[in-house]
Image (cartoon, rainbow, N blue to C red):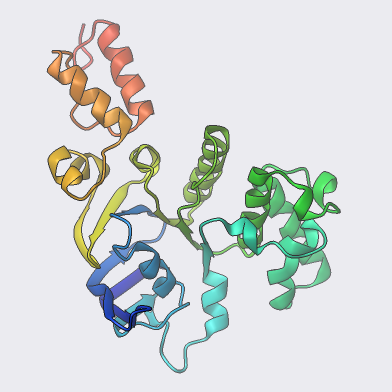
Length: 289
């Protein structure tokens, strides 16, 4: 289910009545199974782009295609869209409302007409994917959960529908490092299973570690689209956009300046660790002693 947007624009009026171009002539293609990071300064159009991809807003111009079909066409089946794309908003836990965790996660499945056994199977699987023991939490009120648990329960409600494409809008905002690691481990496993991940984040360490491609937006336009090592190679350019490169990239740059022969392609901590292990073992970049 590739996603393609062509000449996409979105214009709205702000509280002062002024016209704002949130997106301006955006064209991009995302293949099945990709892990794509969306970055850019606040207000550049990242969240708007996700909402248009999910069909939550109608573009002012241009087209959003899912598997070759225009999702805003009059005859397009919107139910199919909901089955194929899941979107996780920033602070999804505020959307919890049911009396039990099980009911909350199962809500969307009931709306789609799944049978009782299928609902329970999908609900239990989604909760377990998010690190819960189903029997332990199923009857609990979602409001007695901790902050991190509420977020995981809310995300489980999206995962229960088993969408092929996951749109994540700052899913790591306001969470601790433990939640960040566990959440990204689950997202990586979903990506390895074939899910397409499109993730908005200001956390360059996470995107440098996990994303295979990064799209940079500024003033509603795509200004860069490449692999993380290429995007993070120009620190001055990133700083001009009020963005930083990943921590491992900064460490690698300092090591290079100090004469340590590490790769210029490092963007994640695992890469950095592997590189330092090689260097400290007395091998050169080709693996020769």
